[in-house]
Length: 173
Image 1 (tube, rainbow, N blue to C red):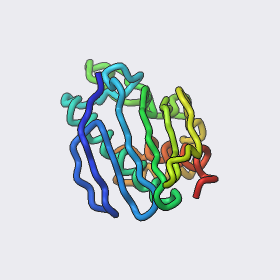
Image 2 (cartoon, helix red, strand yellow):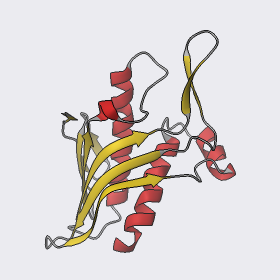
Image 3 (cartoon, rainbow, N blue to C red):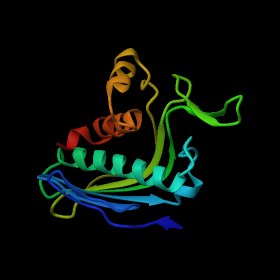
């Protein structure tokens, strides 16, 4: 079961709704599909409203994919199907029985996805199935300082998307 809805981004104008995302920026276009998020390794919240947390998480990551798509060649299209996601940190039970997320360098964010990048002509420029990307350097001193200063709730995960894009598609600018 896929959580499906459509989000279009034109420039920096977002119209949000949930599991399928399509963004058109001045260069490339991206579509993000969240495949069976109920089976993801770790996207659970410490809060009570899991559905709202998941929607907020997906919107943040979709926005980052859209931002990165703006760096692709004009007319290109990136299609991403996320099959697993593991947030930075690990959920732990506190003494009072409530959950908290412990973030340290042992619990790096990771994502598993399928992607296809096509040129405006329709030619496939790059593709890969079942790609697992781990951002094991996410907890370096600079990132930790920026994360603590950032109002962004999913700083480490959006940084992971940036790093994945640079490492995987950086040559297609």
